[in-house]
Image (cartoon, rainbow, N blue to C red; front, side, top):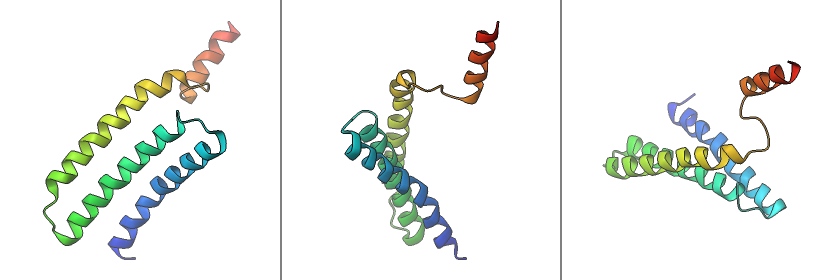
Length: 105
């Protein structure tokens, strides 16, 4: 398998999650969190695509890549502080186990 094919394949999960977020928005009409999460996956796709084109074709796009990378990182990290506290489900299995222990006592 060519390295190029494996790198393109690594983009597919982000594309699928992006499409899933758009579908959830279409079904529910809720902009938050579905469109916000779609933006997160789109920013990751754009950053990875710029990086790939720069690697394959030596276009000299390092400054664009760094800019997109920083924007995508800041956007994703800000979503953690906005959306995680408002989730209805536990954040992780460890949190679930701790809550379960407290209920038993």
